[in-house]
Image (cartoon, rainbow, N blue to C red; front, side, top):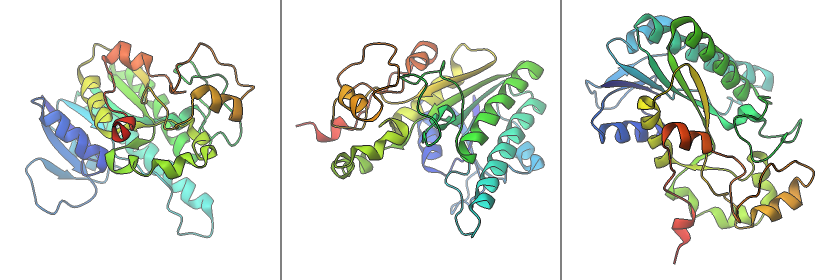
Length: 284
């Protein structure tokens, strides 16, 4: 099975390529950045152009779409311009990937959505309920989040129009071992984590979720929360709730350090069970 990984030279892209290769998949890395050492498994493409997306996905069996503009470019006196550029780039490139896949008869696209579609950073409204899960209202507060919410709607369109299977993975903040060592500074100010409910997911577990979503028995458009089962905080979850969101409805009992983003649906539908925690770094 030959898989195109867009954003294949990025941090998550490289991890996904390694995970897929380790399980017998052939990969094609698609990226706008040039590759220093040319490889037959690399295709350079600006996915904001449909013709380039068409070329990049030619001859593959499925797609893992990770390419995106994250934090808006701030080199302007008008932040609205950067916000608009982020929305346009992400919405256009994702539409083009879906459209190119449809034209080529590719039936499975796994793609990176975001926890932010459900409200983080919660500057306008707090959570409707906790833990966050797929039943929570979609209410993006930033242009980046709006681009991901738009793409989820576009995915439903392609699923309906072309009978494709498109799996949106709503990643939490992606971290790895090199970042966990800095957590004591983060703990000193617990309010820093409120914006996304102290949530995260390990890079290696993200790569596994991409692989599992390629072969899971799914149809249509599906959106799944992908977060670690614990918080980034060293404080119990109940203490965080009392301090920062005492009025928010909590729908079920929670474990001592349980995450406020629930990945139960990803476990059910993908068989995804995150295996790595920041706590492993501090064990012993």
